[in-house]
Image 1 (cartoon, rainbow, N blue to C red):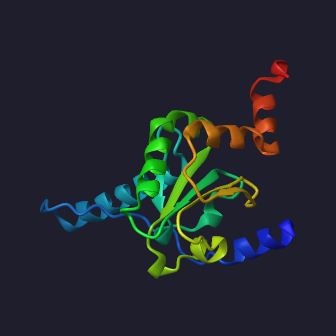
Image 2: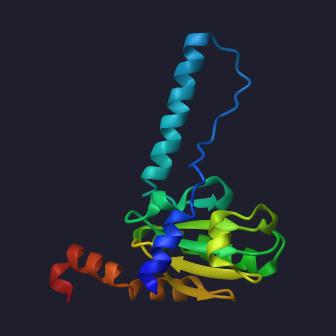
Image 3: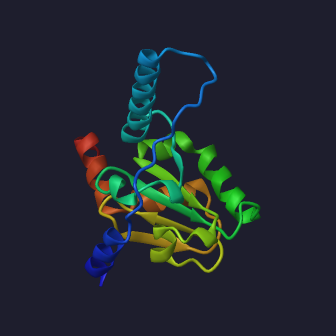
Amino acid sequence: MKPLFTIVFSLLFPIALGATEATDDVTSTPGTETAAQAETATDAEEEIANPDETLLFLDAREIDVRDFIWERRIIVVMAETLDDPQFNRQLDALRDRADEFVARDAVVIFDAHPEDRSALRQVLRPRAFMTAIIDKDGEVKARRPAVRSGRELMAVIDRFPTRRQEMLERSPAGR
């Protein structure tokens, strides 16, 4: 059942990775404008491809989850509105321990817009508020319809086989 879910999960994400564009009101010549746009696009790609310094919080409507498979663990936070108190508490709990989640190769994807029917929402089908963790292999490893503390989420991640392997590779004597 899990391999089937993984295949379905990977096929239902046709959303293209959206790069943010900088909108500067600075007047520039055509040659420098092209260079500035290329630099902005490169910066956005580096930020998404190498988020080693900060925990990324990305909107589910603007990303393709397949870009993170085998690269990052995904913490999904979904709610019916942006004003949902559980949604805000969960995001605050993640921000409080951002450095620890970065060390675990995590990225946060949030979706508080059920009317948009993002691909992630169609696969996970939350009833209201939900937090889920997707491991690097693309499988949903944990789901919960309530707020989890940062410590709880890290404990769940640390039990994943891929995370255990990473810890052994980083500290082989620490078995």
